[in-house]
Every structure is written in C-alpha cells, then in structure tokens.
Length: 343
Image (cartoon, rainbow, N blue to C red):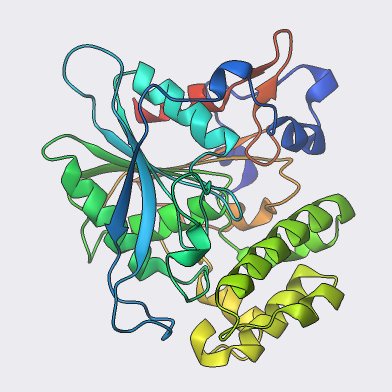
C-alpha cells in the first residue's frame, strides 16, 4: 500500500492549527474532562487467564482484573466491547474512560481489561496478582481472559478495541482468531497500535520528554513489584540505566527464562512485532486508526503492511499518539472515531 491509499478518508481528523502538531495532540490526550471521573456502574471482576508461562507460579492460574459497565440506554444491547489499554496505562486511563462513556451512551456494554501488572489500584494491588512480570509477548493469557469476557456477551456481538500497546494485543488477537476463534467476535479496532515495538521504543528514547515519562512510570512499576516479591527481584541497577532499550536489554538478560529466554531486547521486541504479512489469513474485520504525526509510533511500518479485504487502515493527517483532540470547544474526538468504526 502507498501513502495515498491510506489517506483516502471520508472525514480526516484535522484540528485547529493551534493544536495540530503531533506533540501537542499527544500532550492534549491527557486532558481529562470533569465529567469523566466516574462511570454510572463499575463492577470489578477477577478473571482466570490460564497457566503462567513466566515460571514463577506454575501451580496457579494467572489472574487479571477488569471492570464491567452496562449500557445506560433502554432496549437491547448493541454488543459487548472489550478495551485494552496502552503500556503503563490501565482501565481508568483517560482514553479508556472516554471510550467507555461514549459506548454505554450509544447502547454498548463495556469491559475494560487490565493486563498483567497494570491497573488503577482501586480494589486490588495489580502487582500482587501474579508474581511473574508483564511482557509484551504474553498473548496467551490475554487471549484466555478475552475469551472469558466474550462468553459473557452470549449471543450479542463482541468487539475488541485497543490503544497503543493494547492496540498491538488487539491486532494479534485478530490474527490468531483465524485458528483460535474468539466467541462471537465481530470486529477489532486498534488506535495507534505499536505494531513494531522496537521502533516505538527507539522513537521514545530519542525524545527526552517521552523517555523521561515512560522511564519514570516503568521504573516505579518495577519497584512496586520488587517490594512485593523481594525474594524474586532486584531492579536497583535499573536506576542507573537511562534508556528504555538498555533497561529492556538488562531485564531480559538478567531474568532470562522468566522473560521468555530472549538473548537481548531486539530479539524480545521482534517476538511480538506485527509483521508485514501478518494479516494474510485474517478472518474478522479489523480497523487500524492512527496518525501521520504520531511521535511515539513510527508511521512507516503501516505503509508496508500487505493489504487484505478485511483490513482497513486509516491514517489521519493529525492526531498524535492516541490524541485526536480539537479546541473551540476543547473536545476529545477519539470516541467519535471509534463509534464511526463500529458502525
């Protein structure tokens, strides 16, 4: 596919020129409207996500926490939507709450799943649920949890929506649906998915503001894990390592077999990359929504994806990383893009 075929959009997102840059869009993504603080109903559910392949707890299943919210509209449900957050995000990240509010008002039920070592810390400490570390390669436990949620939908349509790293998981679930079907899955939508995690990692490392933000968040998560499982982990040396790439390299080498047995960070990142021909056997409609100016996810990787009739790739001229915010009035447009894609 070439660039022009990607930008054939009916309604390209073009915000006011004052907020059109990718960095501004990415920063505005954190804007949290006052009305967003709480959902009408938020039912926490702890899911059995199958065996733990990290090797730290082979005798017990992985446990993942999610939150279920029913629609607020009368009449039959339009389906159940499962959302997957980005790296160091959670079920209560701004974009997740924005999506949930829009969906329940449009007649959908919503389940916001937290991946391993991610969560708001409202009902349980997310780092205490499983002794093993989170890895981007842990697709099996995610698929097991997603299947549990899909069964909750019954005969209603089931949808998966992911953002950033969650978008990567969503796309990999769409790909494996061809040989490991997810019950009643109707569509998968990924916003700014990290299809090439190595390139995304390098892009973050090149930008001091983003590197400092993600490094601080990740280091705090690892330190929380160490406090709970001091007999398993010592992450103190990471405090002196400045880049995310080198931190990842140290981690996969130091904890070897528990991190998948990869020789270095590059091999680890490549293990869960969505490759150019990954959608060759796609069996479920899948939409990618991203932005040409995303400073975190390099856009070139999307232009080399091999086309498929069920794959719709939308590259907007602006939007940043999971941003899509306009002004006058200051408003998130991400929920509208999602609802359009669900139609």
